[in-house]
Length: 382
Image 1 (tube, one colour):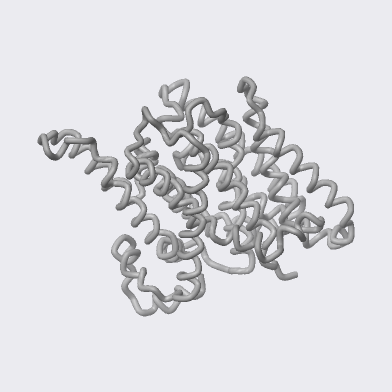
Image 2: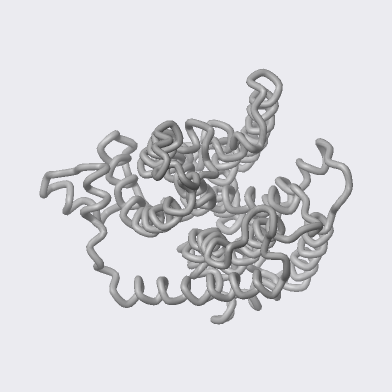
């Protein structure tokens, strides 16, 4: 069995981005209702999906988990993600230097922002609990890049499990243990180290790493289901109802405005896991609908839209002289920001597709230098 492209998952990526945009936009509208469950639901989906796709894409690749191979894999991802990451942070740094710090020689503020900028350039902002500086959305790329160092080792490990008895049970166990780890790590961060969301506990690689590993385990679970239960493909009606039910539950979750508790925060994680498995199988009619060209295109531009949307909102606010006190104040301004983000994202995505050999390798090589000709030839294998 060959694993096909998961077009139906692309549109789910876009929906998750839209929820994050709506959450970030709500901060600029006075008295606009928002809740942490919505952002948790969308954020966990993105993290799970990143781990999930690493397992799914590496399934047929036999790569030894050596330091050299891991570094080359990391470098290839860096070439893909880093240019836009760097540009969006360079743009926002202009607006995040405290007003008057340079003119009035407030070197403490300038030094602090300089240190934070260096940390951001080298993707260390989440490690020092300063994830929401400059382009506040870029922390996700930084954390996922560090977590991608687990991809090849876990892929090698998972292939050994695949060859064993009760592989499904083992992967389910890994997923459950990883979720428990993330929950306990967050509790320890809050209770022992007195950290909060403003410190970025939901952005730190050592905390969200459990969710990422859960995603990798789910990728293998989906593969096992496809390989060992081919008859499920004929149960279109059943899977259509399951997909519809998951959408209804998702709407209930993101619409929740009640008090937060352990159950409320665990449910989005479990629901995200179920959505990934069911829609990866793609046997229902909703999956077929989401596989249409228009929906897939929206998913394709999600990476670019995610990285630039905070920048667009931030620049729009500063150009119009709107600060934390005055706010944007209406949905029309934020609709403009959303449309602008999508149009620019579409342009960037199409440019990348049309000119795939734009020289970004030098940027990545400056951070992760690999010099041998033998290494360059092997890059294509990863």
